[in-house]
Image 1 (cartoon, rainbow, N blue to C red):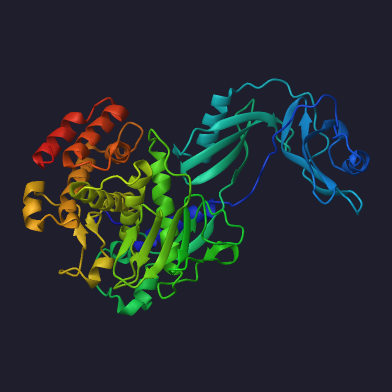
Image 2: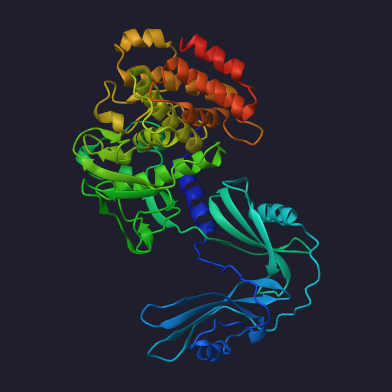
Length: 508
């Protein structure tokens, strides 16, 4: 079907992207300027540590104490950084310990010898280095501003910049070393901790391009569905035991919140018959959605605490986000809700609104806008994945096969009627009327397209407008919040079209 990537092509792209990412940890200690060369804390352990540190590859004259700690049971821990010509040597550190009841030890040494202190002057500015690093790494968009630090590349001994690029596309935390004179790339690594999995993205119906042969079969896995599982990386994991806990998401399973873990965070062997599969789905899709929201340059930060998700936690064909507990709960009735990204992202939409304006939208019209916003986010994230598909505005394509009257979409985000007609047709039921809110937003999304930075105008406007909502917001206030958000982000460049569309749909 036109506009939908084939499964084979999407597998190739996903595998290629995963292959380009190299998970690595590389930390540079903060350097404290200390007069002279090797500087030790004035303690009884100073001499034993000094003798041990002399075994490091770097000359003692190039080692500067950065931080120390006294262990409660007795003993000393000391960190050093290597400096040459007054500049840090990237990643060059020494860690030494002097236990109370054992000999002093050199624990680690990443310093190098033979570096020439005559480094000269840089030809590039930090801005030049950031631009060179972005070009060399093929970074199209950043999640946050890049930074550059002047120092010495330990491998080549050259004067260089260490450039930090929190990249949105490709997704990575890139540390790129750039020659400070020529602008050549000397090295690059990705600091993000990645796991691996094979999941539905966004769901089997969209991937296949139709409904043929797709049935729930009481949560059984079968060949057609397994062929539609796509390889993905699970980014920003922070749990050292390979559990699904990261910067943005803490995904667990069952009502008790059992942790989901695997050696090296490798979940590729799971399929939909495994209870942990839905937790992996939730982690991937919420992490991706939050990363996208953060990339839009909103005026205020969203919640820093990871979103807790309980997959397969209730037997109902229902899911919810609680503004009181800040938990997102996924049910198992019919098709397990955690198998369809539309359901996961819709519920996370409620969390995004609560993060922007806690406990807002408590009126019936406000709740209607909340349901419509969740559907809009599901459609927008599907569109970003497919590149444009008739299924984007079909909400809950896979989940809906078990309850939809037509056996297809649970709801739609491309309704053409106005809110007055919807109120009568739906008898003011919030999910039904919410289809008009989501459809109006998605109509504007299509009409306004992308801005000069390649970002969706309406995605930015809608997410920014969430900061302007209150407990009593109604349709009119919601529409005015969109207009105000465009004034804030784009100096009102799209206000006329937003206002006209809202009036045509009778929200204003």
